[in-house]
Image (cartoon, rainbow, N blue to C red; front, side, top):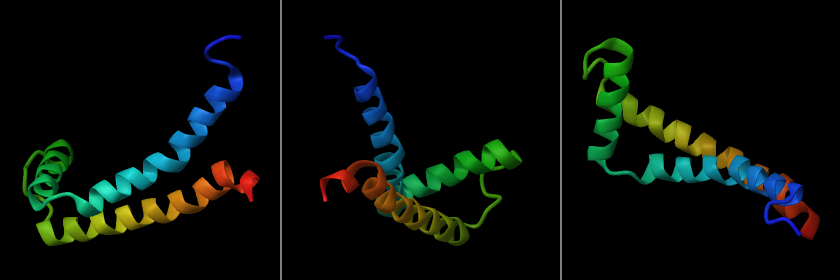
Length: 87
C-alpha cells in the first residue's frame, strides 16, 4: 500500500481548490490595518514604482470585495467538491 495513492492526491487538490480561497478571503477581511497598508505598499511598489499610488480607502474596499468573493467561491466549492457525497 503506497503512502501517496492517486485518490489521496486528488483529495488534497480538491481541498486546496475549495478551502484555500476561503482562508485567503478571511485573511483579507480580518487582517489589521498595518498588514493591509503593507500589502498596498508592496503592490504599489511592484506595479507603479511608488508606495502610495492607490489611496488606502479604495484599496481597503478592494480587499474587502476580493475577500467576500473568495469566501463566496469557497462555500459552493466545498459543497460540490468535498461534502456532496455525504448528504
